[in-house]
Length: 208
Image (tube, rainbow, N blue to C red):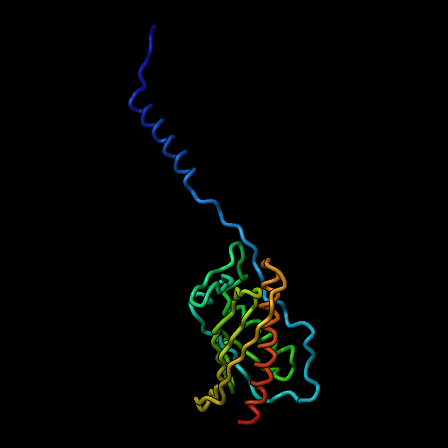
């Protein structure tokens, strides 16, 4: 009986194929997730009792913690513990998403027509600078709730001085344990904050 031993080249090919197959099984599976937008400021009618202002406003991208700076949806699971929703993301980094939503809220209000964002490098009379202190779901014994906290500073650009400062906060109960309900509650809390922030901006500028 004539048996042939594998050649040196054949042995190398067998080992290479085995290595490739082994490496393929070690690759992580691609993560799948659902991307969420903030609910739009629908139903906000322009204020009818106030004339449009004659000054320009620049809305800057808010600063935030590292956790809120990305596109993860934050969850507070304890007094000092933070986590994120698995399988869910914001469609873009939260600070940029929030800035765009706030500008839409200003447009929906209708009193400030001349708006710009900081990335556009346009001149402005006033600048609205904000910090996202909280934008998260909080787990509690009585059920989860959405919490949004924003610090705001209205700045006179020409004089380089602070016109006014204020903190805005809102909470909403989450109707169920799924992510859709959590995003809806965050949207409702954020909508309340946005409305108050817009009204405060107009009033603070008028009183300056």
